[in-house]
Amino acid sequence: MNSGDPLIRLSGVCYREHSPWFSRLFRAEYILKDISFSLEDGESMAVVGDEDSGKSELIALIAGLLEPTRGRILYSGQTAAANPRNRARNFRMIFQDQETSLNRKLRIRDILQIPLLINTGMDRRERLERIADTLNLVDLPESIAGRYPSELSHGQMKRVSFARALILNPRVILADKSISSFDPNLRAHICNMLLRLQKERRISSIITTSDLDLVRNISDRLLVLDRGEIVEFGDTRKILSAPQSPTATRLLMNYYNEYRCDADHVLERGRKAVKHHEF
Image (cartoon, rainbow, N blue to C red):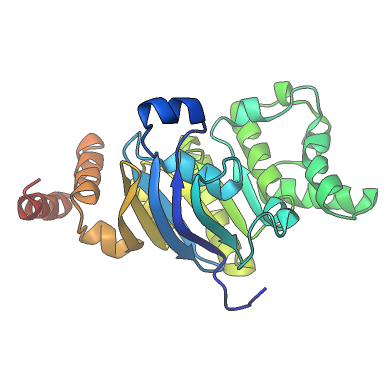
């Protein structure tokens, strides 16, 4: 492994649903087309786009839940096949529906203990200490470890889902639309926590969301997708303050129009950009 390799590198990644028979007959289009970018250690990235732009598929590919049809995904210079444990341990997913992702038949202690049993050589005392520390990190009492998911509130289940993603001290947190679904207090807490972890432990994050204020506050890099293709990628604040693509401009205008924010200067920039792009 070369220390100069980026944390994640995608090169020419294409994806379409695996259905050879259907593809041969109807030439199914790619959901993602020629995706190439890299993310450095300690950086955070947000992915935005329309509903069918391929955001969820991109997160699933990086997490290893899907396999690319073409192209390569490298983790610190290695493929997942070369070191599958590296991806399993260091790239942790927060699922969009946290409630159904928790096994209702297991206590919270066992849900959090499973990744430790599979991926570490910790003894029981060490595992329990890690569980208590991680629950504390997401503002949950240690006593909750003995409960079942059905005994928890909606917000507590979301925190447990986040704790499960953090339990292995990963290098990357992957979140597909999940953070923006949290209530405002929890969302603020999770954002502050991610920023602190990024600073203290160099934990990176990749999120998909339609909340551009969340994007502005939590991400260093912004990737804009349109029908499976990258139309803009770069510094988050630069893109949000002066979008260069019609897609980013439209998303920005629609967001502030929907939430009726006092952002006349943003809308004016958007109108000028739309006129410039003849959008």
